[in-house]
Image 1 (cartoon, helix red, strand yellow):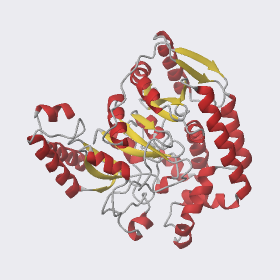
Image 2 (cartoon, rainbow, N blue to C red; image 1 turned 135 degrees about the vertical axis):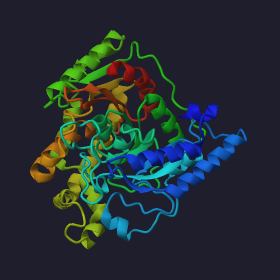
Image 3 (cartoon, one colour; image 1 turned 45 degrees about the vertical axis):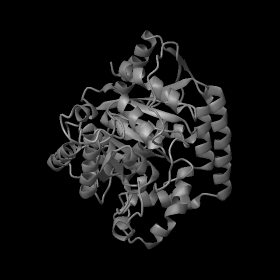
Image 4 (spheres, rainbow, N blue to C red; image 1 turned 30 degrees about the horizontal axis):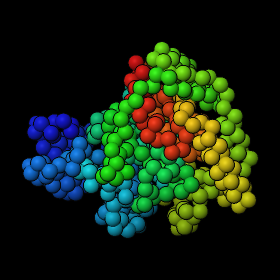
Length: 442
């Protein structure tokens, strides 16, 4: 799209109108919560005016993007896909820092994308604004993945080239994997969180979803600021990758296991040094969660307690309410113990991993059907926990993570290959991701 704009084959205004026409023609009406039509047209016209003067803002100038509905957009209500907030919250006074940074790069803001209510599930179901359907399903509606559900589906359906998401326990990488696109979650200090509606501030991170590593790198750089150059590709010959044999391979669907083994084989044939072994730190993360509780549930309850207090029955997704209320039994000493353990483990992983990368299936299964999950809350809970397992290990250790498409099962449902690096090794991970994305998709 950027090349077409540069050649003069079309204008930013034409590109914007094409995007809105595609959204209007899309049969899935649950992808967007709000279209910022007037804003987008103003921004596109401004981009065209700059281009006419030969003064573009860079390779993203004039290209469309949309934001997960927990990222502030000036003049719009940041609903976090909660009907209660959509009806009662005041509009944001300014763009979130990342939205402002993408606007400063010349990107055209199309609106707010749907998500799990309050970002509190990995499956993407939403009883208020509808659930976007996985576009790869041929046997009935399947989950989009959450909580950045609209972001994953919009990119997979080619309604827009890229979208932003947030990731507290897998909320970028899960919809990326289920929808067969690329998703990047940065380390905790990668992007400014100002103007982002929180779930659990200790674990909350941001990142882009797109269809290629080139686009991921461009959006990543723009989200960080105008003086940041995009990460460039590196050769992965001789790169060491650890493939854990503990926890992350448990309960894999046969197709996911096969695709992951084939992906590792492709990497080895390309000269990557794949080391299959147990990683004790992953066992320690799981033991900490089981012994002293989950950070995200406690912090989410602390933030959302006033909202729960004023909500009438049915005004907040019952599954979200159940998770929030479950955290009310947590002890302060357990929460503080978990935080201390996490600080120690993050530092240890940073020291021990170095420039190593870690690979695992993003998720142990492909996207499940929606109907059984809607009918059975116990099934929903068990599937949600299993879906969260691999990605949330990375949030606890503050790693940066990529989910890359690694093929599809016999029904054409995508599976994801997750590549992780120690906290702060984002540039190295992205640089390696270019070639690895091509290898694991082969």
